[in-house]
Length: 445
Image 1: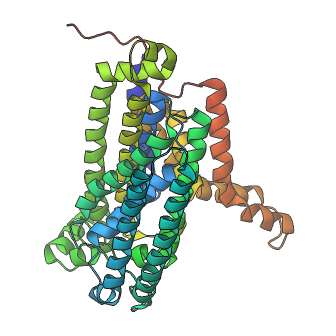
Image 2: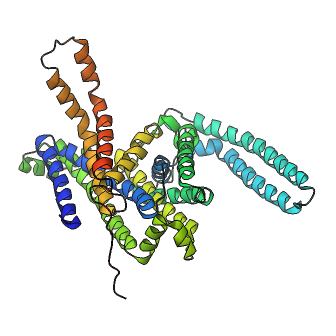
């Protein structure tokens, strides 16, 4: 079977599985799986750009997704005037103190030469930074205490800009790209294992900041009620034409409204995914894409041919992280809330990597297929596990300890399946379901 035919067959099978969920379970569940699969596919596409194109091992996916999520809050939520009034001046003074500290440190290092008295230069720099730190803390602590203390149960943070939520998707990509640029300037000159450690560490720092800086993100109190790009179900149910449409279709208005809203999200997410896949395919098959794969396969040979390996790695690292940040903003938009506590490596890093490995690293459509398969299994594994355990323990007494243990263990089947899937793929199809295309003919000159 050729790769193109295999691709069509695999996606057709995935569509049939989603259709079966809609028929035998519910269309609301089927669309929920579809929407989360679309977002996961975009994240997997970003990781595939980094690993499949350039061989960059990024295990900080969670942090870049979280940066996209906070962008949704800072862009779309309305500002909190009371919080701004309570702490804006001290916050401004803290920001000015930060800028002044940076400027003073640079000035000191320029005025004092590196010569034999370099110890004075270092001591003066440390003194400037220490003084600046205490000044920043003085004003910053007063600002954050005032902001977090203002109506803490309902707000307790500065809010956002009150702009459309779709704009936050672009801002989320820019936030992640900016963070990736800073990380890449420091870490991309290191070996791949050190890059993995650096991205993981910085990802954890980002999550720690989002959980603790409540004046900016509300921390673990979460931000709910984010604006939506789709209508609210209750608003549709109040429309007479919608109620009549539901009656004509033989559906309840509540069910149809949920399906209609989910379809709006599906159209938005699918549009973004299609655009990204088309652009990614064009880039992969361009001279730039062939150069990236040449660097991935033999960076020393590419460097000998005059290619700036570190610069090209920085390019793809920033682009891939921007795609992950975009997906992070889309996920928060779908959830309607920002919850820093839900950002854990299992969901936002491990699962995405399994998606890329399963689908086929280096193949954009493979990464998309892997996202659909893994997320489908992740959602369906728990009810399937519960059914399996109920079937196996049907003949046991209701109070039997072994029966209770097996039923309580049913939710863990999804973790077991992820491990089995990963090991099976690595053993029997190490290049994935849809492996990377090799030997692509050059276009005519």
